[in-house]
View: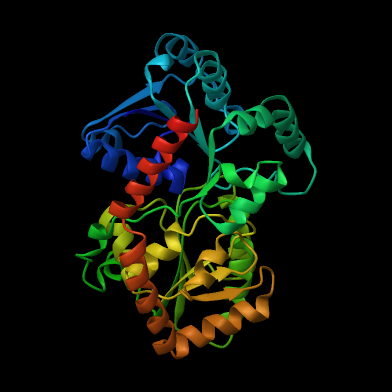
Length: 388
């Protein structure tokens, strides 16, 4: 197959789990003999990351503007007009983007089938409710988005909750395929020795609570810091590490840390990846994902693959995956008492939590490996081509 992946940026710090998924499945598909191309923008492009994709062609178009995280790459129009008809199947990633508008237009014009994975971007969730950003999302949906959903041969859902998000937009259930993003199990076969992350950052506290991801309001970090402030009143020997790039919320979060007099107990590392990320997951006593909204279980399941307990917000889409395999603990977003109590439970008596992580680890290794995952994507693409 000649396959095209489309995403608006190819930078791990900014693109997060979506970039990681595209990287993994593209590399695996190329390894199985498929011809794989990625269209993206050059906004904060990571050349080393691209060079690690042996056998995959990456075409980063120049970004002339990035207003409101909408990355305009006008050169894509000419390339799509010239080359899009050559592909057998197109995979659009996320929902609202300039790239999707262009590719959707030419895919329809040339009759090239495409699948779309919204990666949790379908809801119009915004900070502050129905504000200007919500209105802009609504305008995109009624002018461009509905057509993209309508014309997709298949819609990819990563969780049962994502299936519901599609059907709520009028997508028929028979066009939705649920595929949980796979994990490269080999990455977790040779973990760093315990203590390396602590040593690098001079962490001497007995307990380490870790958040790993973008520093964005939707990740619920204000809630996490407030609960951590309550935790340290009864548990002194504990530190909170926030590892990830700023996505517009770092200054507000830093102010909150200072207001709660937690600056000596909260460490910001910035973006980490590769072996350093694995070292952080290994050294953590618990990894916490307290998001307001979250679809992916990438970080929690990576923690589980390192044998580390996890705590996840209960009512997010991602929590269903955690619950299904009893991988960790679920707490209500905004419920400080419940989060503090769960943290104390895991830190004071970790045996039960580590048993959960170990059982979930075996499940992930057996059922969510990259090898099995790429077979599901191949089947999806063949089915989409046949249906078109």
